Length: 288
Image 1 (cartoon, helix red, strand yellow):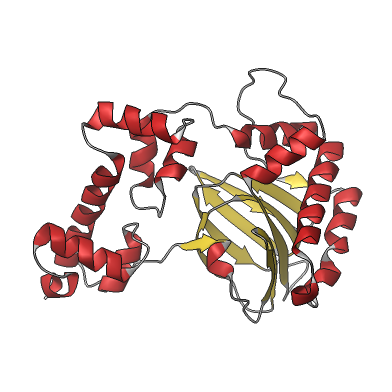
Image 2 (cartoon, rainbow, N blue to C red):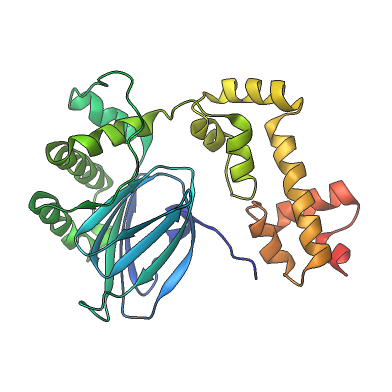
């Protein structure tokens, strides 16, 4: 059965019973806690994510690797990627899962590096993703945001920004390696375009996302893509996604809605319109 990819933080705009959200002026912090059984799914990260686990175990699968984050540990993940996650309870700390997700925008990182007068040290090898312990300073910081979740509607959006800047200063004082990883988030190393687009055909990526992942400006990405494929990236991606959707409609019992989201389309209306333009009939009619 197909699985819908949830875009975050946008897709978490409505609080659930087991989650609280601070989402003001484009700055997002999410607190989640649950007493239920194991959960798993797929997320597409619209912003860079710093994940803190306070109770339980949160496993992230990305790029052929699994990163298992335990209690009092954290991991930093770049934007514009899809991750598979699995949340489970810790046998030594049963029945409770609790974590916080801090979403970091590029503009915030640029502002921080300018304020803190932190400059690149020169070309360095990419810092790999790694799970790191949460020290006392960072643990106190995570505790300090707790009161804001009680009445989020009363919290000023500028305060959320200040708290996120405080987090970045605490990280700078904590881990030089992590700070280097943060700096590398601003500009990805230049990558092979065919590899990037093939990996993301079925992900809900925008052209801006693909340009970022390839280490190019949007205009450079479009120009280089056109030179390789003799077609614009928008039309190439749409064709490949529609071809995959056609295969699934013909050969599986998966619903039209699930196929829509499995093939990188963000809503069924756009999917149906594009499919009909390409194949002359709606997905529902084609499936019949």
